[in-house]
Image (cartoon, rainbow, N blue to C red; front, side, top):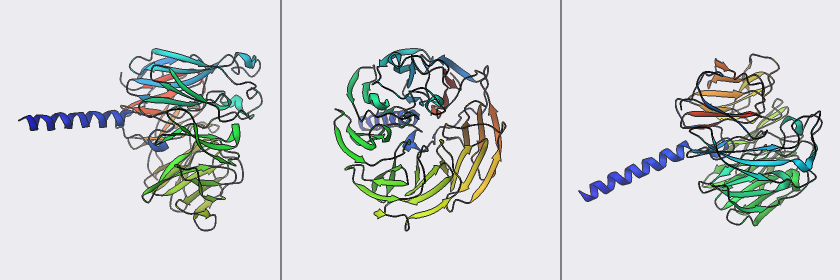
Length: 418
C-alpha cells in the first residue's frame, strides 16, 4: 500500500514538473530558439475588445520579447531618451528597465532600473530609431534571469529583482544599436557582443566571470543557437560573411561556411543537424558537424532571396517566414520556393520572427496586425487580427499555457482566456 501511494505521488510530481516545464517560455523564440510552442488551443482570432485577457501599458518602449516563468512574465523596456526622433532628449536621462508582471492580472510586481554606459548609440537616422534601447530578450534557467543591455553589459537577477552580478562585454556602440539575446548552456551565459567587442562571449552563470571568448565576430546582430550533432552539441551563429560553428564548452572554432555577403540580423534555426539562415537576399542551409572551411563541402544549398530582420521557422520539411508584405514557404531539402503569397497590406513590414502553435503560423507585423496562416505547404490565411492601439510591434511572441503574449512599443498583451 505504501509503495503504491509512493508511486502515485511520484507520478503526480513528475506530471506537475513536466506541465510546468512545458508552460514556461524561457528565452528568445522559446524552446531551443525554434519559435515552436508545444501548446494546444492557442487563440487564432482576437481584437481589441475580444479574447484579450488583459492589456498593460509598459513603463517605457522596447522591442524585446517577453519570457514566462510560472506565474511571472519578465520583459525589458527603456525611457528617458530616444522616444521621439524629432526630440530625442539627452542620453544622460536614458534608463533601461527590467519589469516583472503578474501573468494572471497583468499588474506590475516589481521594476528595476539600469543606468546606461555613455555615450550610447545616438537616436537618429533609420536604424536604432526602428527599435530603440531594449531589444534583447532575457534568458532564464528556472532559477535566475540573465539580460544583455549592450554597452551597459550583462546582468543576472533573481526572481525578486535582486541583482546578482554585472559583467561588461565591451563598450563600443553602433548606429543600429544592439539586438542580440543571451542563451544558456550548462553553466554558461553566452552573448553575441559583435557590436560591443567584435566577439562571442561565455560567462559563468554564478559569477559573471568570463570563461571563453571568440574574437572576429563581425556584422552580427543575431542570437546564437545550439544544434544537436550526433551525440554532441554545437553552437552556431551568423556572421559576415557566413555561418560559424563553435564548441560551446571551450569556445573553439569548429567550422565556418561563407554563405553571406553582408551583416546578419536573422538568427539561425537548427533541425536534425542542419542550420538554416536568412540574410538580406540570401537563404542558405549548412550541415553542421564539419571541421575547418566547409564552404565547398557542407553548404547544402544557397538561394538568392532572404530577409533583413526576421528569422525563419522550420516545420515538417519546410521553412517559413514573412517579408515585405508576403508569407514565404520553401523546401528545407533544396531551398526551392513553394509559395510566396501577398498578405493584406502590401507594405507590411515584419521584424518579429514567426511562431508555430497548434498547427498555425503566427506572423506579427510591425503595424498591420497578426496574420495566422496554416502551417502547410499549401497557403491558407486563417485570420488577420488587429488591436487598433496605434503602436509598433517589433517583438516576437511568446506562448504559455495556451495564452499568447504580444508586446508592442507601448503595451504588453495577454491573448486568450484569463
